[in-house]
Image (cartoon, rainbow, N blue to C red):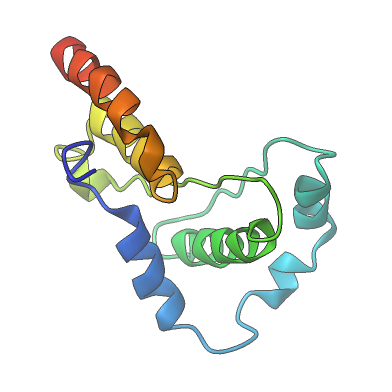
Amino acid sequence: MKYLSPIDFFVQLHDIISQQQPGTGQWFLDSDEFRSLVRGDIKTLFCPGIPGAGKTVMASISIDHLNTMARCEDVAIAHIFCNYKSKAQQTIVDLFASLLKQLLRDQPDLTASVWVFTVNLRMIG
């Protein structure tokens, strides 16, 4: 799995969540817009903001909430955090490979099939 991508967004997510106080961002999770996203009424929730406004923190809170909800369902959740300071390390191949790595994290029996895919992807990328 380490071959897929050197990027580990799960660690970044965990670091951000571990620094939050209980209830942080609850207003966002309770918003009509976020609830519409969870219900599937909307497919995209666009949340623009200036650097340092807290977009990554709010995204992390949302991802953590969705991960908690998905534990009881047949749902997979993957995420990436794009950072302009890391654009040299965040190639399109590594970003997609990171998503794949996250989706396969709990599916070790699929790893052999993915190996062939990633070898071909690396050759293209």
